[in-house]
Image (cartoon, rainbow, N blue to C red; front, side, top):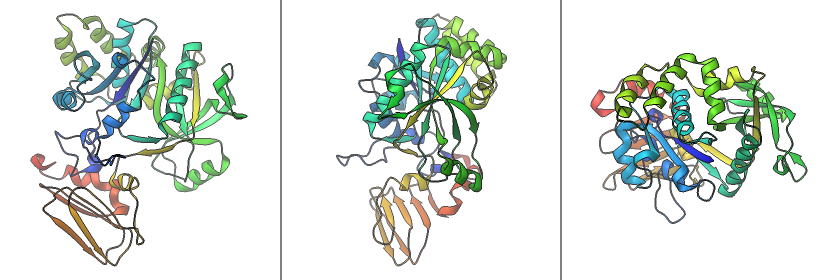
Length: 374
């Protein structure tokens, strides 16, 4: 049967100080909705699954410490629909944890892996492509499906997927005369600008969306082959799942799992493994990974000078160009005079001022902030 898991374990350090310890970015209600009500990234991600996967087959994998907040914000995701990690052990183990639990409950489980920090439009096209991903794995359980976003500029902060030979056999593999499913020829992580430009110009590369569809059984088999230590620990957790020892074993074993991403731990070795096929489904959608303040401000319209503002507080600009303010305090005014390409984020506990060009360094700044203010 079909299942879906939303990974929601990120700390959101590059959205500090709005995202803080105890208030992760996926739960911050700061994305404007069509009705004017701000929504969280997690709420938006869950909404995209409507009509695609049965409600009781939708899961969230996140830190156990966020359980109460998520259950309060999204009451449907409670109990067994929320897989709580005792501590973060990177994406390989979040996916492996999900695969182990699902395989115990459903030997034919096929599951989508989605993330809680992306904005994707139009949602209907996203659902159509995800549906095709499910069909590809249901047709052949040895397929690992990833999704390739049509690039709109030579991004150096994203990974890339190179298209190989076409994959057919399903009506959806060709749309309006265009082949949209290919074998993956290569994965490339965050290339320098000159290479990113060449990739976009070639028309053979797409951005790696970090979304997948797997057979739970196949994923665990690959885990045993390529990451045996992680597999051994997750099987121990699987054996205890649903028993009185479930919590104790999870808390004892999960923190010992080797920390590694699913891209490095499974997808890269699988690309050289003849027992499986990695298929990339093209998604010609508007896609934004909201992992930093510049990417958040991309969701907003700017005025004639390019200045942008968000939040319940007031922002005033005079002269300058392309600056952005998020003001979380309705009793406070942030004023910028003659500032170009500046980002200001004001909250009740901290204020951030930085050039937009230094946004990727925010994690280092945040790590130097006293612990109770992070």
